[in-house]
Amino acid sequence: MAEETLDTASEHAWRAVLKGHALLVARLDADLRAHAGMALIDYDVLVQLSEAPRRRLPMADLARAMVYSRSGLTRLVDSLERRSLVTREHNSTDRRSWYAVLTGQGLAALEAAWPVHAAGVRAHFAAHADPGQARAISAVFGAVIADLAPDAAELRHFHPTG
Amino acid sequence: MAEETLDTASEHAWRAVLKGHALLVARLDADLRAHAGMALIDYDVLVQLSEAPRRRLPMADLARAMVYSRSGLTRLVDSLERRSLVTREHNSTDRRSWYAVLTGQGLAALEAAWPVHAAGVRAHFAAHADPGQARAISAVFGAVIADLAPDAAELRHFHPTG
DNA sequence: TGCCGATGATTGCAGGAACAATCATAGTGC
DNA sequence: GCACTATGATTGTTCCTGCAATCATCGGCA
Image 1 (tube, helix red, strand yellow):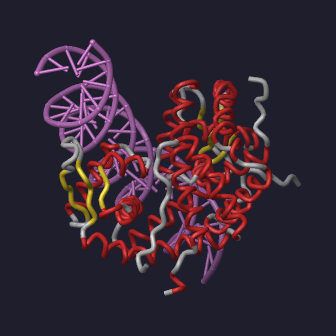
Image 2: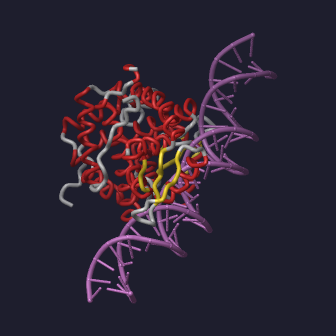
Image 3: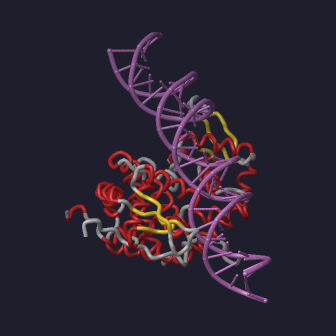
């Protein structure tokens, strides 16, 4: 039985994460919708593309980076394409694959949305975390990601050039 | 705004939380569905009720505790009631209000599901957090919750064998 | 080359979710 | 007590989302 016990510190931490995450995402999504005309999920697509080489990613890689289903991403990119924030381009090295590509309008929309989002994250998350706590959170969730998505952990922030 | 820069440590931490949370929730939900016959959202309802006095909560309080819409909760409790895990009871002090009440079957289902869930949280979250890190996460997300849901009841702990 | 399992993108479909409207009841001010 | 507003629960509606199926293409291998 003792082996099945989840220690209270970790359990408390996990439950705080669950609830805090839900509140934070609801707030950030509402802020973006109200002040930037896009949902948080749209913003996430634009951010991922903006950081990728040549501002494009194959659909499957984008879905993995976002922890999102490929079918959901198909429809999400449809929507962004209708709004001219993203376009699709053929991947000449793999004819099954399509790139989602950030447009100029998409980049402009992202740059307009970013201050709104950054202010929200700062006010409701960063304001409550000192540097040591931020490091702890990065370390723990980085390990969670490495555990549960080992191939994708470093995909976005680390592009070795060679 | 004077300072629009979101410092990189906080930004990195928040992005790790977003992705790690998504991966963790997907995994815990799949585990519960496979090995306990219920979804993570069902489990959350049962936990909340099990910890409440007399194992019952008004629908609105339960929705707030779960950060869930009231309409969604109506249908979720419908589903749990069909499976005899929860029942509704009149609240005699407020005739608009209904209690969601954990049944004996609901408690049994929760006790069967708990080891599955605890093992998942331990293996994929707690295993990556030392005590100091767990404390840091609790502190930060506790502050986030206090910021965004100031009137919400404090988090409680579930210990079914106790 | 030809076969065959794996992978990429999309679509059909079904379940899940929130918003707004609705109705009943509670609380407040007068 | 009465009017008015706020709150609790539900339902209608619409959108979101993922799974499974489908089709095209890739890559390994004989």
